[in-house]
Image: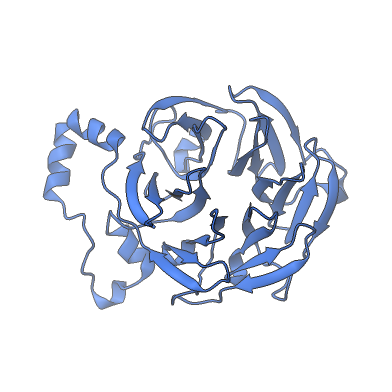
Amino acid sequence: MKYLKTIGFNSNQPIGRGFNYPYDIDFCSDGRIFMINRMGGRNAAGVRIQIFTFDDEWIEEFGEEDFRIPVCLSFDEDDNIYITDEALNEVKVFDLNGKFLKKWGNEAPEYDRLKGPAGIIHHPDGFVYLVEQFANRISKFTKDGQRVKSWGSEGSGEGEFNLPWGLTVDSMGNFYVSDWRNDRIQKFDPDGGFLDCFGESGNGEGQFHRPSSVAVDSRGFMHVADWGNERVQVLDPSGGFYQMLEGEATLSVWAEEWLNVNLDEFDRRRESSLLIQDLPDHLQTAYHRASQSEPIFWGPVSVKIDSRDRLFVTEHSRHRIQVFEQSN
C-alpha cells in the first residue's frame, strides 16, 4: 500500500464541515462516504453522521439527536445505513437522506437484548451480523432485528472472545473479527465455524495491541487497525506479516482552506515542529510518538476498503482519514 491523500480536519463545532472523534465510515453505492462523528467532552451534542466525497466535497449531516455512543455503520443492498450504538444497545436504520426508518435491539425481551453492539456488516446471505462486545459473541439478525443465531463466549480459546470489536467479511463469505482484548484476529466460515486465528500480544511484526478493526481486500489481504500500537498492519491471505503502515499524512484540502483564512493559525503552524519527533527515552512509546508527530497515525480506530481496493484509515485522535492505494 502507498499513501494517497488525507481527508478531513479537526473541528470542535457541533455542526458543519470537520471531524471530532470520527469512529467509522462506510460507502454507499454511489461512492459517497458516511462517517460517525462521535465528538467528545462538552461537545457530545454534536454526535452525528457526516456525508462527504473522496474528492473533498462536504455534503450534509444528520442524526444530531439520535445517538449517544455510536460505534460502527454498514450499508445494505438498498442503500439503507445501519448504525450501532453501544450505550443505547440498539441498531438504528436510516435511508440515504438521513430519514429515520426503524430501530431494534433494546426493545427485545431482557434475555435477547443487544449487549454493547459494535462492528456490523451485511453478509451476502442477506442477513445482518454484528459484534456484541459485552456478551463476547457474534450474532446474526434479520434486517428487522430478529435474532437468528449467535456464537462465541468469553475466553481466549478458539471461537472465544474478550471484548471483540470490528467485523468484516471476505468475498467467500468468511467472517473476520478483531478480538480486541485477546490481541488477535479470528476467522470463521459463513456458518460461524472457527477457521483460523492470526496474531498475538506484542509490538512486533504480526503482533497486536488492542486491534479494533479489520478489512479484507479483493486479494484476500487483511488490513488490521492495530489501535494500541498506533499503526496498521497488512497480513497476507495466510495470515503472514506483509506490510506495516505508520501513516504519512499531509494537510487535507479542508485544512489548507481553513489555514488560508486563519492566518494567525497558519503562522503558528509554520513555526511549529510537526514532523516525527526525537523523543527522550522515557517517552519512547507508541502513544507518545503518535501524539507528538502529525504525519503518523494517532488513534487508528477503523479500516475500510472501497470498491477500488483503496484503504481508508480513520483516526479518532487526529480527526481525519488517511487513504492508501495498492502499490502494484
